[in-house]
Length: 241
Length: 73
Figure 1 (cartoon, one colour):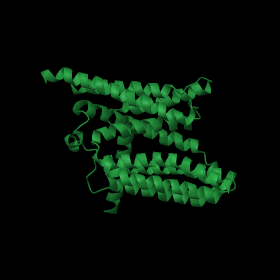
Figure 2 (cartoon, chains in turn blue, yellow):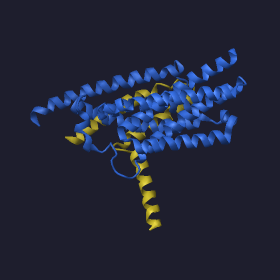
Figure 3 (tube, one colour):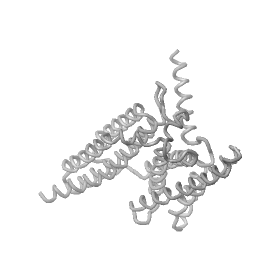
Figure 4 (spheres, one colour):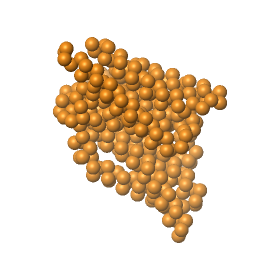
């Protein structure tokens, strides 16, 4: 009984951490780019993940996740930096309030009928990578404790619970000015991209997963500093323009 | 008709990857790739290298912003 409880709690909490990252990416992209392509991308990610889990099962624990992390982390880092830069420019130019309305014409929010491949791929990769990590934790931990069924229940419960919370608050997220959201998501994608890319190369971060917090602080402070510098530049030029 | 759609889809997919990776400033992607390569070299030489990418990230954002403001004006 104690072993069952221990396996459930451990896989639930470990999966919850990964699920929070998954929901953060999906909700952030959905609120910024639009929901249709994001949901399709997330659903496609879950479908591919389910197929991978079904086909590979317990063998999932031996898939080299390092290569996946390196490729996905590098792409997220590059894309995150582009969002970070745009977010800094827009927030510096228009401040934190009323930006959403001022920038609806700048194209990041997808309104055309065809698929928004940017939203699709980011949501797809976020779900697939985090899902692979959840599956990896669940399968490896459950198998080593000889409690695979309990571990699967713990992992799925965490994903369903965190996913439900994410869906519940997404209307609040949508109300946040889009440029600020782009800045925040840019910091998040740059943080996770940096962390995963280097982890995929076998680099050991100081403090392990705690380095994510350090990177968030570093990139957050960097963004605020550049916003202050850009605002000073804009204000300095404004009398003559 | 079908061929046109296939070609259009392939072009659109290629354009997406170009915009996804290159975007408005190609030096961002180039800096990331160079940073990862140098990090790998440092690691293989036994040098602690986790700090390089974060430092380059902070630097390239500033350089890119500076370049954009100069281009804009």
